View 1 (cartoon, rainbow, N blue to C red):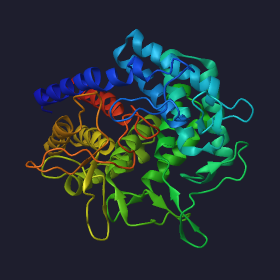
View 2 (cartoon, helix red, strand yellow):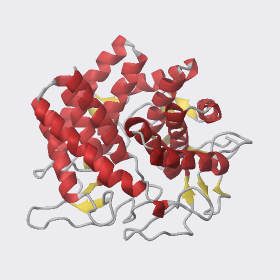
View 3 (tube, rainbow, N blue to C red):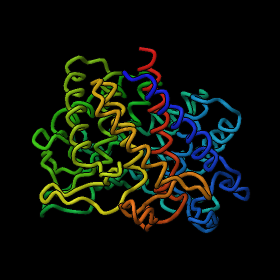
View 4 (cartoon, one colour):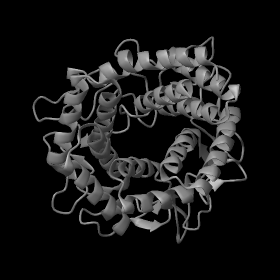
Length: 410
């Protein structure tokens, strides 16, 4: 292991976390002083949209981030922000009658969309589990456990396959409205539910959570891994046949290290061997197919033509740093450390918002001559909304600081 390079990378990442990412997300400007909690949208030029609804995804990610920041860095500011996020979630998002949580609430806190959306519910569980890990709180843990059991009872269709949406009372669960063909539904790999279950098992040790996590992990190590293309399936039908030709490199990055974390805590030797092999094969695919000459990671590519997206997105590049570092920890191969460093340099040069803090969402794939061009994307220009949250880049920092620490100590 190259200790000096690892120390330098850790110091740079930790500096960005403390001086760029967290100061933006913990700033008073994001606090809704009228109705509690946090605003639902902040524009690119830091203007608050007070009429925008508040999303469970954003609330859960704020809660997860501040709880994690407090555990890693300490500080009463992060504790206060975590308590604020948790209090608002339990008061306004938590469905005390049917369990789980609402998808969106009005700026004033009343339910706006009371459906049970599995993507949102994943961050409800993830945020509450992180809060319990940092501060305790039996009510919060109980709400997370209840949501997990309701999801498993009502929304699970198969190993690793879940419905996308249910009514408030968990009835009429539906899969993604897109169809491959009549009668063939598309299931999206619910990786955020997977990581929520991993943390919930870590803090609870509950046997039901372990069973659900094992089911997920075995699915990822088996039918959800594409052994021909050496990457993960993101969308499949009910028989785990791939749906569509687009491959998401950012999701490959996430699944690489999340599957490894889960396999390690589950402690199953056979599962861990398969997961390690898949992780390293996926890492090499990402490194060779996804990283451009400047060090940026493409959002994805077409499996049929090989054509790559002509833009770069903040979250995928963040995940690339963590994934390549994980592969370096697993293999000791310098090429993965070099890839992690290259993506990180790219982030510092092209994604960091020197004016308002945190990072830009989308940029057009730059050249050395053209420089950075911030563009609209599937999260918009906003600094904060239901998709642009303090999660991917903060998690990359937490993951990287932890992994580098393990390598230096080992």
